[in-house]
Image (tube, rainbow over all chains, first blue to last red; front, side, top):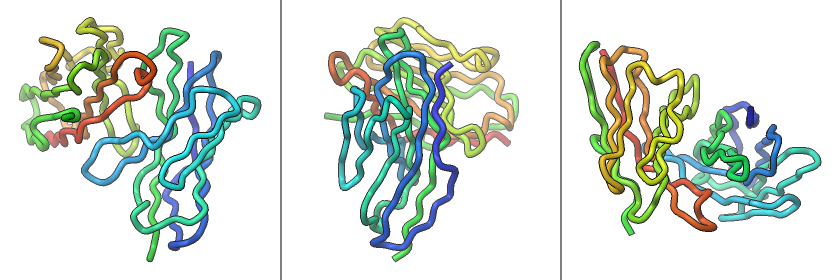
Length: 114
Length: 115
């Protein structure tokens, strides 16, 4: 079945440093890929999505490129801020195959120190 | 627009009790999902409805978990009887139609503690 694997956490960074959270996926079809972010006491919220291979998604300084050949979708940010502290989830859905549910990775807890 | 609403936000139950969690999806959304979130297992799908019809019923959760969609704007998740291992955050999400239909919008969750 479909699966998503991402960087094990927790990750602790200093403000101003760069972030990379690795995400790789397995699916037989052509999924849409997502990054979600979850703050304490809230549900996950969409950071951005990319429906097509070789395209890039971005929001709030975060970006990721849908790499079909490498089956990867790594999240990057050049300079993190304390307010970026949260749990980040990579996810996929594959509606063309009839599956509308989101398959989530295990989540990566990010803490940014001032 | 109002987002996904979940009530209660916190629930404490004794082992063996029946509890009912409630969810109101985003107005106009056709798809509704229930998830369980724990530190060890992460996000697990419990149920998925499309236009009020049950599309997915997470196999491992069929035994004591029952989700219903009474109308297009209200869903419940019943756990009967509760066990301590059910302690988790229960999340409801909804999604719409068209090009945005792949995106799910989550509620704040209900934190359940079973003693």
